Length: 498
Image (tube, rainbow, N blue to C red):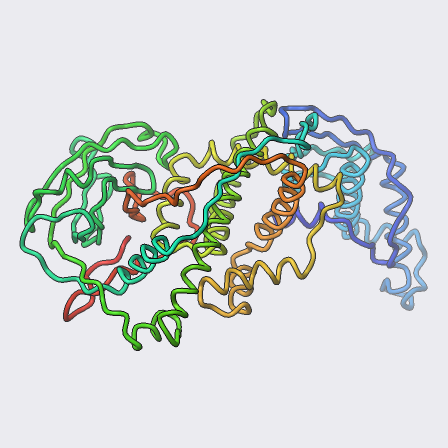
């Protein structure tokens, strides 16, 4: 792929020329689907000869042949002696120029590198040079009406009750876990071993997982409703079983939609004791000088989360309106590649908005279970927003990246420099770029919309999210938060989420 990418990129030739006479290409394009094209290119002999003559001319001043001083050998001898060595160079130049020229003159708007077997392309001794490649392109579609949309906008004033509840959630992360001999109640924690079986075949297992008792339990590729009821009588040493349905988009195709058995062995039950808000804890929570400073920080965080929910609901309505007529299909390979990017984009948005790790895990698990469908919707929305951005001359700036990175850093507690380095190392700057462009474009769409304010309630978490795939293979390897449950009295809590 790297050789193909290099061939696809325009470049100056060895003489430093920035442009040359266009190739007289014979191009045929087969429209395989909305986003897929199969392209056949033929380069005439005249162009091949011209490129060969130019290569010989470049070589003449330094060519070394027996009996001749450098640069003094006859052109015919240089051409004959170095013909084979020049072939690869000429082939590479022709491919580079042809790919660039085809993309420009045919207005292909590629969204991926061309699928071209460079090694199979032959520079013939006679006749034209021909090659074929497949490429994914931006879909062609009629632009939907995007001005004057009617949108319901969630509205809420952050109350003292909201702040108090959020503070309790913060304190839960610093709670002491006290062993309990009885069965767990809602909000307690169990430490458990899990096994998932398809008949007698063990699909996966995880030991010493910490699980909060909530109505539901969420995995990377399945969900279990009624979890609180399942374990309400399960004391330490007890094993309970339940049927779990694997999602239709699980990584293992043969297991999609299948009912399998979950065995859960309770090892420990623990109660959470909230700590007092002492000066030491205030310092640990973020260097706060007083309870009022922490209170203000939590209110600000809730405002950021409210803004995320507002943007999300507005975006969902905008996306629904814009993609209502987008009935074109997207290539499965494209969806599979982009599904990872969709997960990463969502995580960046959540981190920027100040959501805790537990909320991010739940959201990621929800996405994983319908990642292909959600990616298809997101991609169609992206293509439409990108067209609007181009039409309206919306672009990104260096300041936009600085703002995004500062926002993520403020929520993660890391320096902007470290956040930027991490994003660059993981190749996520293009994800950030799309996020910036889409947000700016959505702002423009919403500026032209009419709004009706509707009351908003913060969602109450009803599921605990475990970073484990029932079928044994996780879709995507994006970096999701590690569990940060409270510590047990006297020693760290055993087990981390796998």
